[in-house]
Amino acid sequence: MRTLAITFLSIVLLCACRAAPPADRPDRVLFVGNSLVYVGNLPAVFSALAAASGHAVHSDMIVKGGATLEERVADGSVARALSKHAYTTVVLQERGGDLMCAFGPDSCIRSREAVKSLADLARKKGARAVLLGTYQSLPAPSRRLVEAEASAANDAGIPYIEVSGQLQRLRAAEPGFAWFYMDGMHPGKDLVLLDAVLLYRDAFGSLPDTPDFTVDAPIYTSDSGLTPELRPAGAPPPKAGTPHGTSYAAATIDRLLSVIGQDND
Picture 1 (cartoon, one colour):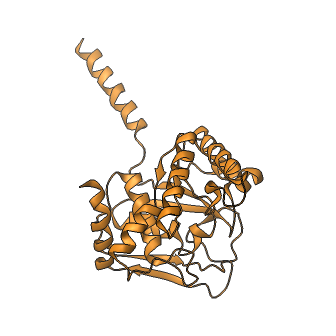
Picture 2 (cartoon, rainbow, N blue to C red):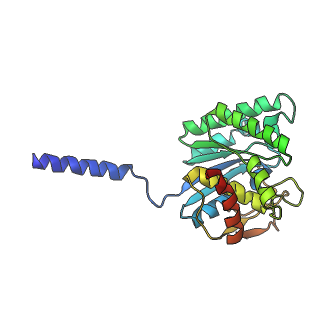
Picture 3 (spheres, rainbow, N blue to C red):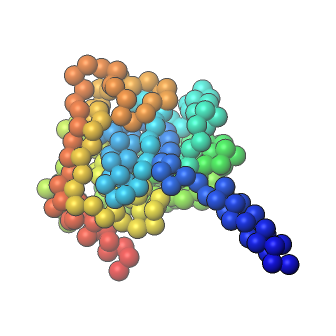
């Protein structure tokens, strides 16, 4: 009997060891979207923020300026990426305004269908999909946008990471932060940080614990030269002269976290 018990325990321990994933294997995240993703290189900022807080994350992206999620369904690029790599998370971000029917009454219908299609595709490949929100500068359009995005995510059965309302609060609290790129539309350095922090909270269940961090990757502008092929966040840029690297100071991070943290109070 004692021999049987020892044998059984050995089998249980062996199975447990085989079931556990390697401790040093990074999460692999795929970002799918447009210039709202690549201006400031959100995928690289998210990876750097996670690493500074003790989490290994490898980020890839499939992005193009002005692109819609419908286009990524049609060209099969996301399907190919999911077949090539074992992603843990797929971050979807739609072109700003599509889910509000800003490009015609059919645009929001097609957008919702694309979100659902890509979410289903990720799910079948064992990945968790999330919808990362976009933003509107004025309060009323911001509220309508959040409602439309939340509804689309709910229909697709995936989490929604709301950005626009958070941005409204943070702009009021910290008007001097770099919320927008020089064109006044694309995300500025601190809005990219906000997106990364919200993604971190969704992925790891808490706000990040880091004093400061540095991003060693291309920091794309609106004139990126990127095409919708699978690309690691830190890969060499297609255009010479693309700025490289940026840092986030502890004071900026602390202030942003303190405002976001009020959500949990």
